[in-house]
Image (tube, rainbow, N blue to C red; front, top):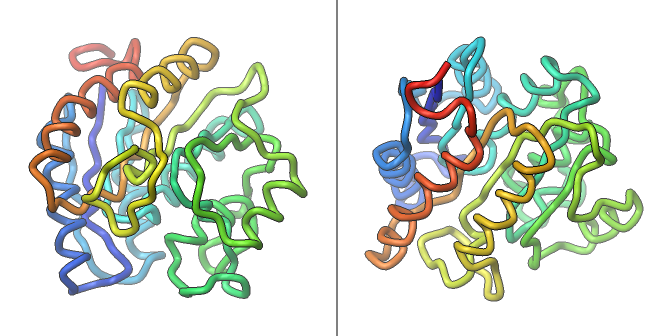
Length: 248
């Protein structure tokens, strides 16, 4: 059983980019195969949004969280760690590191800190009681890193694969894709859609995938819309596996 949780959240609040991210979340929900869909109201603090997302997460089946910005992964990954403990690994597909802290962030924007917060360093009220360990994180598609983020990856030996025996939560910021322009900060040299699907299928062959976030779509191109209309259903089906629509 697939539960889609639509989170039209952006730290930019009532701005044109935020409205595009809300439109993007709505579009992603419309093309995602599911048995149940929940829309989490926008607005409020990051902690309040995370609490609403946490309340919407299913007790069983497969959650698909759709943003909005990357902050929407805070609650589902924290919940997955609580459920699976140290068996939980995270694969973070993103052009950016999302590994800054309030002290190192050039912008101060939380979406650029969310993975570091899940790893135990971030704004105090948002740091999970039980953080991820760096050994339980893999990254893919990163190519626009701040110096502090590069240093963190090197210091902790974070690479592109999870350790055997882990289950996996996947976070996909759509700026990981090559050529996509309907994102807030497009970067050249990403993954073609077929390569992203192949990488995810390889993860699924090695690990049970227990949840998925797709974030960062800010519609501005009919070409991107067509790409995602084809990609997203396949991505969700590969990740959900035995939890696919109509299955329990």
